[in-house]
Length: 325
Image (cartoon, rainbow, N blue to C red; front, side, top):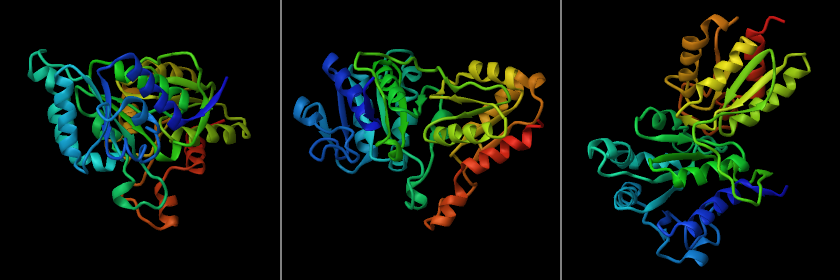
């Protein structure tokens, strides 16, 4: 099977859906003339023209509102944020507009729109450009939230998101755009709301998403050297959460560690921990452990970036603290 980059998988998903459906269009900062801040939309302006690949002003609140209004009127916008850090300015349109529209209009107006872009740490970018906002978006009823970790998942889930009739939050990572992975040439879709077991194991369950999956898989390899068999689950979709896959794994391993780049308070890891104790308490042989980002703003200094973020060593330590073999 061919291998392509994460950014190319995203581009293929958008191009295929735009060829299939003339109501799909892309808008955002630098998506057209510059071919995308991270080259995700490279070549799309040449194929689809300026009416379907639209450069916007640096005004997230404004162009997000235009996207929401367009979706209410029967088209399917893809709104790209250069980074989700900037999308904080657009939360009013996303939360008070897109998420609530179907309910507030008693079903008269849907909002089939995809909001996508990068988030999280990408090195020395400081406090305002390193935030994981997945938990904020996932807390809002009416939004579906997706955060893939591989090119294969990125393409299949983005195609599903574009076809979905609800507003979808699609959260990527600029550090993964160059990642290579196997992606079929033939069309495929991945259902929204289904996690995947990336590695099977028997002694502990590791749950994560987005680029933290790389650390989870590397930690599983390190643990294997100590005869600890880790099962690794990629959430892929954050809301709706596939708790069934997690619970079935915990029933087998009896231990779980959740890895989440977000701040620990009210994190995705917190929700997973709550649901595990609710539905699988009798199967747990040890407390649920979390490995999260620090409960602080990100700093610029490399040593503080390292101290802030989860790591393979931190995951291994957490697993050994709950594993009594």
